[in-house]
Image (cartoon, rainbow over all chains, first blue to last red; front, top):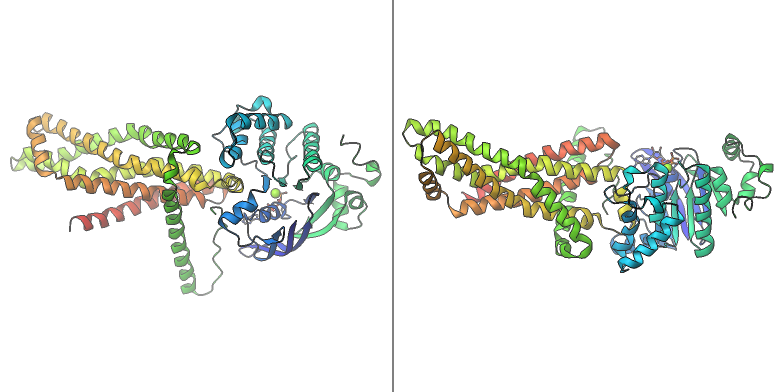
Length: 256
Length: 270
Ligand SMILES: Nc1ncnc2c1ncn2[C@@H]1O[C@H](COP(=O)(O)OP(=O)(O)OP(=O)(O)O)[C@@H](O)[C@H]1O
Ligand SMILES: [Mg+2]
């Protein structure tokens, strides 16, 4: 569904992605993990063409998006929901209006239908009490959840999450994990989750991709990921004190 | 597409090559700014649609009504200062009565649009670029684009309308207040009757002066919007970047307003 073919990305002279290859299948949840600065956010931005590869191709369902423009690009983008690392809510609109914005702008739904839908989504992310607040007056974690609500409200078929659980407490993090998992199971959306949270990655993913210095060093299902011999993967797991025997009955224990 | 990567100048050893790239980059920037502004104008027919109406009204209010206090004070005092200075000279020839014509013609032709342009560039222009700049660095513009909401329609068009409508109106207001300020000085300091002051003003001022002045104001509004939005959309580098964008908005609009004002004057009065 989403395919990176030998993508090289340089900002000026600084290489960020160096020969990036990844094939994301339809309907799967894939986690991108890696150290800070590995190029995870940059990878996500390539999928919606906020960035263009210096060389190489990005394909969405076989369509090369490198130099799409105008309406065609709009059509591709409307299939995506994107949760930004910084949430990127419009500061002068309330949480409710932020979530309602894509519906008001891009659909012909009536105010009443919009109201119903937004309320339901806000309930799902646990923000029903903050609906009338401005983004500046809610916490970072709440902004993240509002951003998440805005990303999913249009029911896109591909969801890109940039660190959905960073800055959230463990309990809320698991709620968000469940939400991502549920969206994938119920609606069959394709999800790409960038995360530092290994518990989250191991619970929700069908596959985990390890990024290191702009390259994919390993792409495997969670149980194989845990047993990986790759040094970089091991270092990453050990640093979070995650041991193989710890996760025998994964992920059933955590996801209901 | 509004979100773009910054233009990286290739490393060149030759000085001329570097200048060449700088020149190219400059032309590119001017082109982009014009494109954004023109596309905003193409969107203007959508101003009454339900999703844009509210923002358009708000921008009209923000640009027009909120600028009234500062513009009032500046306009009144500009007229008064001008009347005092010309009054001193005119008094030497016993021609104090001419002060009405002098103030009115100067305000209508040049100082009205010019003062209004500078004030609006410094207040509204800087605020536009600070807001759009902050939105750019916090990825809000990118988020809009991914939601298939064109930032030009959503953000630039209402501001463009506000500036195009309000600049001529505010200029007219500046002209009137400045003439009133001149009258105050004329009556209290120079001993000119109000009626004589007004008669003299009408005698010298032509309708053409008013029209060209208002047309200039319209052009200045366009310039301020184009510069401010371009600077906002190309902001990089966090809070420092927003500061830089705001500063260059004010500086660049001042310069472009001055030069354009000169060219238009040459065109109309030559
Ligand atoms: N617009 C840009 N201009 C220049 N360099 C950039 C830009 N965006 C990203 N980079 C560089 O690309 C590298 C990877 O950035 P990226 O944001 O993808 O990291 P990340 O893996 O998401 O890290 P984190 O976990 O901290 O979010 C960084 O070294 C950064 O300096
Ligand atoms: Mg990141």
